[in-house]
Length: 96
Image (cartoon, rainbow, N blue to C red; front, side, top):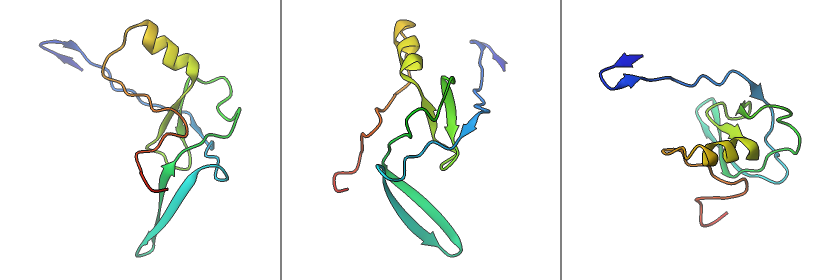
């Protein structure tokens, strides 16, 4: 998309991978009518589930984008701003 300030790009992560470690992760399940919602309070990834990809979508929670340490280092070396990478196992919840 071209604007007055330049061209912008929208990332579309196509690779979807089942990678949620349901044993180590802290997950709360809620029901809203017939819908079942997973609230991931503490996230762990199954080791080696991402394989050779730098970035994937998590199959279990499609809105989650998972990146590798290599991707993180690429962002840091490029001095990329405006991206917040949260380490596996971190949580914003105080009681889990």
